[in-house]
Image 1: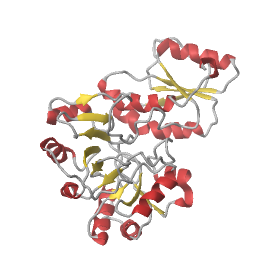
Image 2: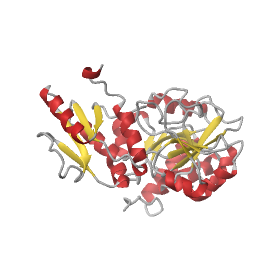
Image 3: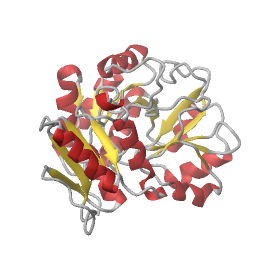
Image 4: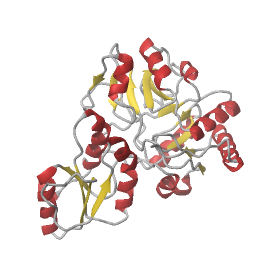
Length: 347
């Protein structure tokens, strides 16, 4: 069951907060807001200084594109030079929702937003507060969209609750809208439609099997050695907690824990509930659990990793999830988080 969203229509206080946020955005401000995937750090995508401020707040490289969030699918034609039939089919089925489409950009789209590329990433979020904000913003602005990467420092864990944003970015953000915990907890699925065959650039909250139901064949190569376009969240090291993290399966997890404990390191294990029944036991150390289903595991992953950062462990060992398609997005995020860890034994 998905966690409830806070309804902007039932709370005068929240409705006013959304209206204030929309005005701030139209005036060039930067506002963090919830989506169904993670919290975004939004700015008017047509105001260069506002977009530069987002990059500065995050410490984001200038060549790393951001996703433009739109109020309605019909607004995509203001940003995309061409919308092929496959894109229209995906928009009709999955927008609003956790799907980002990469399309050829119109000439007038700022290359600050696209990371200098001739393609633009577009999404219509489903979270009711995000939709209320986007509609209020476009009404105040007379159109447009919000450039909105995740509301965190670049490369760090994405925020799934409002307090995560405040803890990460503090007073550098003009306003933080609190829409409760995010439904999916992982970023959107990114699909490129620049070539004849659709291609997944980043696995995410929307499954590949759902895409195949609409498109038939979809290329799914998440490897790093790919041609353009560059897409958000595809650096080898990304989505990482402060605590060095390793991912191991089965007996390898047990052996690695014993090795690190022998070095007098403070070690914790993150694993799936009931996953080690009947398997070799771990040595005595703190164990933390996530649910066994991929959807609920994904929803809690970033929040749990953020919680574990607060304990100042020397190393976090994560039990490798299954390698089937349902876990693709989770495994992608864990692999990128682990890429930041350099064990002296392995240098």
